Length: 209
Length: 141
Image (cartoon, rainbow over all chains, first blue to last red; front, side):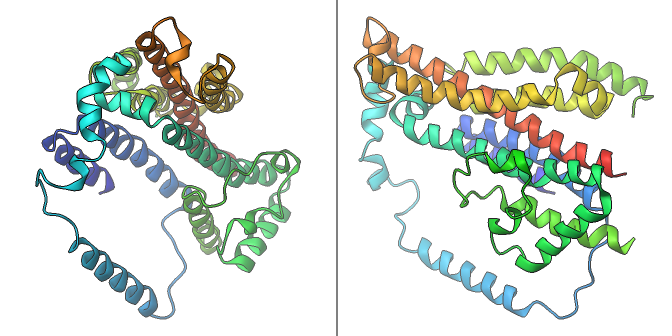
C-alpha cells in the first residue's frame, strides 16, 4: 500500500518536472521502505494486543491537526503563480548563475551539495543518527536475547511498559557497554521513534502466541 | 528461498546491473537526475536483494556488518572532512572554491567529494538497517 502510494507520488513529481525528487521517492519510498516494512511485519507477527476502548482522543487530535493544516494552506499563494515569493528569492540566482559558479549543469545537484551544503550535511548526519538509533534498539536486543533470552526480554518489557514510548530515555537505561559511548547526536530524530513503536508492538505479539 | 531457481538466477543477472546503475546515478548526478542519496539507496538495494534471495548468512560473507557500519560512519566523515579541508585551505567551511586552481573546478571536486560521502553513508545505513531488521528475526526464532 505504501509502495503504491510512493510510486504514485513519484509519478506526480515527474509530472511536476522534479525528476530528482521522483527518483528519490521511487527508490527510497517504494523500494527500501517497502522492504523494511515487510521486514518489520515479519518481525512482529500478525497478532496484536486487543484494544479495550475506542480511540476517541487520537481521532480528535488527528482531525484537529488536519483541520489546522487545511486552514494553514488557505494563506498560501496560488499554485503556479509566477509572482509567488518562492520564485523571486534565490531561485533566479540558482537558475542563472549556478552553472558559471559551480560548473555543474544539474541545478538540483549544485544547490544540494554546494549552496545548501550545510543542510545536506545535516541530512547525512540525520541518516547516520537513524542507523545509530536502529542499532541501539535492535542490534543490542538481539545480542542480549541471544545470551539470556528470559532476563533481557523481561528488562526490555519493563522498560517499554514503564515509559510507554514517551521518549528515547526508555531505551537508554538498559544500554550495554558499546552503546554508552556512541554519540547521541539528537534525540529529536524521527527515525528512532518508529523502531520503538515496532518494538512495543513486537512485545505484545509473541506473548500472545 | 534458496531453492527457487528462477529467483536465484534472476537476482544473479540483475545485481551487477543494479550496481552499475547505482554508480551511473552517482557519477552522472552532475548532469542528470540523481546523486548521492539515490545512488546509495540503489547500491544498497542490490545487496538487500542478494540478502533476500541468498539468505543473510551468505550476504554476511559477501559484506560483513562491520564493514557496513564503518561505511555509514566514514561517509559522514568524508562530508565533514571536506568542510574541514576547505577550512585548512583558507576558505570557509564547505567553501569548495579553494579546492582547485579555478573556483569552478573546486566546486566540481567539492561536490563530487561530498556526494561520495553521502553515497557511502546512505549505502551503509540502508544495509545496516535492513540487516538489523532481518537479523533480529533470524536469531530469535
